[in-house]
Length: 316
Ligand code: CP
Ligand code: NVA
Image (tube, rainbow, N blue to C red; front, side):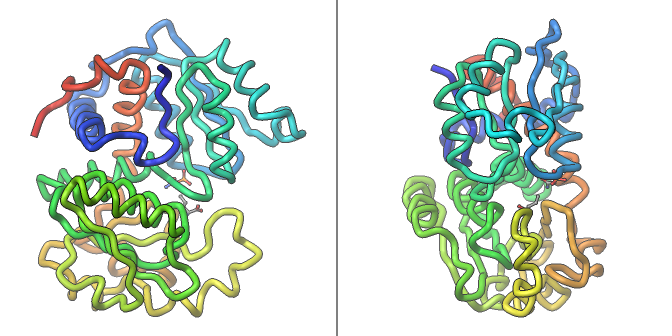
């Protein structure tokens, strides 16, 4: 059965660990696995702008022996309304996998339903699961473990990053705190799903409106832009509610000693995070951005051959 990665809980806790182990191994030896040798092509389709995702997938696919094909959806027939299922049936005969950054999660589901090759969510309005794999790899590098750590996220609790921290963090056995203003709470189904996963992994998921309480004792502090792609028309209204949730030095001081600060980037210094934090000693954001490449390579290895990827990386 073809495996897809449309949301963080498409990997079981064991599979997530295997992918992270492989990501570490691939980081140590970038060219040790070449499942795309041939080269086979991987389609990288973008409905929204991207720097990190575009570059890390393109470079990662080449590392794996493959050939990346970057498709600007607006310049393709997708932009003129060709059905997703028809696009899937055309692409699957040409490429080994389809990586797609888009708006609606339903589009990804339709692509996966129709495609016989793996489909990967490179960011949707609802989730950003590839980013969370890189984030988890980064935290593990700094803390040596994930299970039992507390990750506090500040800002828009209803966006893709918040939802992926809930599902991906719960899968890793972390305690995930979403600190968000009223009106920007996570999707209820996603929160419920995170709690169900956490019940099995020893983690937890909670939503709070007091940023300082969320930061107290946290091992990881994370934030994201207040206005996500596609929400530009609301940008002026998306400042005041979030001001109490800005990650600044006082918030970092309230966290656990040696807390790690994450931001998926691009960052808006002076809004969701101060320059002193983003560019300061607690920040892991450049490692986090680099790890996109390693984590996504491991993910592609897993999706292309789930059995072979299991146990191939370094065990912790
Ligand atoms: N973090 C992230 O996905 O960055 P890009 O939008 O540049 O791909
Ligand atoms: N929440 C942001 C993440 C960007 C990588 C957005 O969707 O624009």
